[in-house]
Length: 423
Image (cartoon, rainbow, N blue to C red; front, side, top):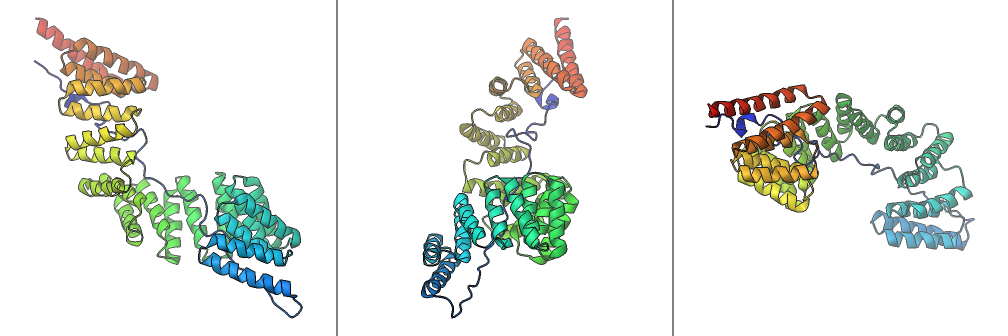
């Protein structure tokens, strides 16, 4: 007669754990790598006077037409007009500058830098051009040249808040967090309403795990602009990290009020809902993510976790199976599906999944431990003890004494049962 059962002694890892997809169950972050508004879209107003010749008048007209197309989002047409302006007046700094800005928006960073170089050769005293060239270098990954250009802009205009802001973003990308914070703080001293300085300083503090300070910065940004969607999103992430799930959900609700199709936010809200055991709400959010992208393996595995919490084990198995069709090399998914099958007393199916998991990752002691328990329930006591001993070997390497003791206790009980049955 059996004295052990899997549901009682699955002690090595919770049935689904926090590694359902091989990644920690953290919210997806949406920290942009580039400030959406840091391209200088300022249009230089061309000063027309009687001393301009016909070609210069034409150049001004072409520039204005280019600006109109740029504002309408017709970037290729804008490029044509800026080029016509340059043909008419080859020394026209404003035309080179605006064409460079347009190239940048089209992600032609080398073309943008070439135009900014020409503009600076003609007139090297515009800090806006240095900032914009710095942005192009930054997007090419050339952080040092970007910082050099921001420094030049600050030499020309020491109180230019945008130069500090953009230099701070580059330091953020370099993970030089303290320098980034210093630049964002300096920008705010110059312009206390510079919302993106609060936003990015909050992002830096988030990365430093200074979640309360990050929340304070995001809240300042929201006071300036209550419609700033991405700030609510990232404040929600910081609240989530602090375990303030209800506050996180409030922020995610606001994001979805402003941007109803934000898939990242549905995912993040689902994680927070799981934490407060609102499993039905979490499943509803994961459904939204999967409606948008049925191949989202994180959403599938997290929904499987949630379904298991609701004891919808068949639904959980279905999600894990679908996830394995997408990524058949994920050891954790086999492991978790094996745990669900064991819960359903499908021990043969569980052992099969544990075998596949071990083949992909032979270093996870929990899999050996749970396969040992499944084998025990299949009356393979020798196989069970062998697996539990392997689990102990790996637990020793990891220094996990409590898990070693649990495995030893299970082995002892199996051995005692064998002795009893032989009497």
